[in-house]
Image (cartoon, rainbow, N blue to C red; front, top):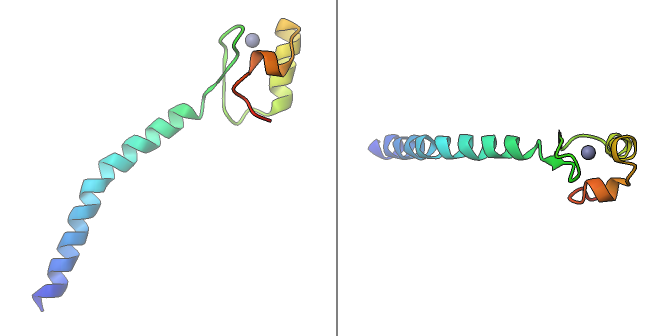
Length: 75
Ligand SMILES: [Zn+2]
């Protein structure tokens, strides 16, 4: 009888222990999501920014290619 309650208690404790860790790693991921930075002018772009927009920035602002301004971005 007490076995089931014990297992539930254990499970709950495990969840409580894990919760802050999960939240922390999630916020870190969100920060990294904004991590395309133009190597020329250091302007940050969201990681979800499409390649054409980065290409446009590179050409309009610096007359360079996307590869020169955004070396971290893999196509
Ligand atoms: Zn730039």
